[in-house]
Length: 361
Image 1 (tube, rainbow, N blue to C red):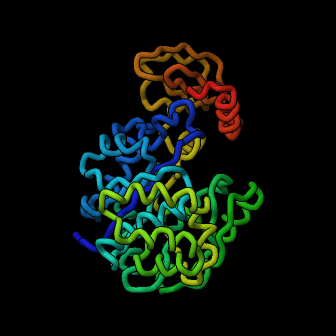
Image 2 (cartoon, rainbow, N blue to C red; image 1 turned 135 degrees about the vertical axis):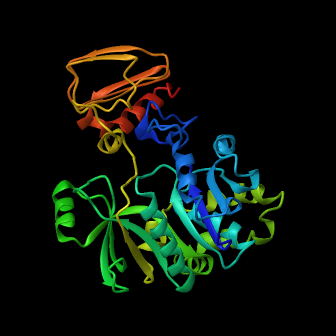
């Protein structure tokens, strides 16, 4: 196994669109949403474990989730969990992890991945990541993984392919990053064959990404570079806590990838979904004969004239459900969510309303 290769799992999100199963005290990356016996963060670790030595994993998360990470990933030690004092989007998160890695291996090649995505084609995934890391190790490039779209999805960002970098059409320069389109534009994107879904998975060498930070985000770069002597010491957390409030709240896409001229995209067909909403889980999950998603656990529920719905109950809870068509019904602890699948975009608004009323628990 190549000791020069690292994986950073970004696990700081609060998963509000998966409410009420996902709560701030235990967001979706720490939940077995798929009903497979492994949480999202465990599945992410499993996905990279054949390629990355266990000591070369880092997880970036909130201090409040450190114990959850160590509980669910016993292969890691405390020094492999980097704690952000506040959420500042992906650019500061990536800068922190890169400078920590640079302190021990300044020539490392690193894959950054969200903690809460689903990938069904493991063999192809390993091939894509290994190929991307090989290319990043030998070229001054910033690689992003782009997924071949299977439908005109409005919930994902897109990447437009530019010039092919080799003859097999698997690697292209990036022509354009674009945010979530409306349905009409998404249909155009898919019909052209030039656009890929933006997976949010990135691969680069330490020197290449540091050079990009120096050029496009010098404020962030200076903050983390100035702490070079403190990484892996008992003063590291204190330093990180002191500089995070000074970091701009900016994503790596806006901060660097949309500006750099050495960005390329590795095209892939991975059976990928970011499982960002109940609707995306419904789209990917196995369904019964009437189009319902229940995770195969129907012994605690009686369904009558129910179709096209996603239903999840806590262990020990029972329900009789009649006459639903196209609904989300989720029971999480002390809370029940019942809404049409077509209204799932409103869940975050409803959660904000509850929080503002002082009922966040």
